[in-house]
Length: 125
Image 1 (tube, one colour):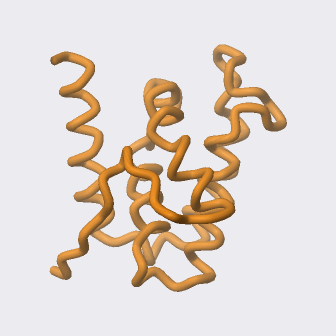
Image 2 (spheres, rainbow, N blue to C red):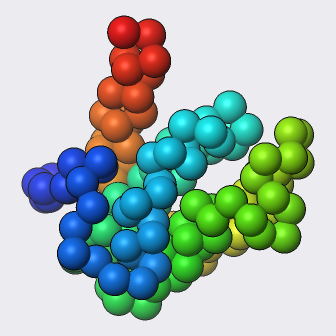
């Protein structure tokens, strides 16, 4: 298995555009959406795939566009509407993940599990 270094999720790198927006808001949004999105681990794996420099540019662009929609709180259905807020985000994420699923590798899923375990520890610790 290829070993890839992922930046600490809380550090915002010198990225621009969609990547910068996703990096700056992703973890805050995950914390809000964790109970609303049953496949949150796959969403986090998508985040790591989008940041992986070995991911093809077209795949990164697709994932970053979907993740940008996810992190922007005011979209078609604003995220703060209880019960419905993340339903449009789910549709966008499922579509994007389905389009590029073969590029989301086991290394991205492992990184996602580690990050979610760390979030769970922060909540209970």
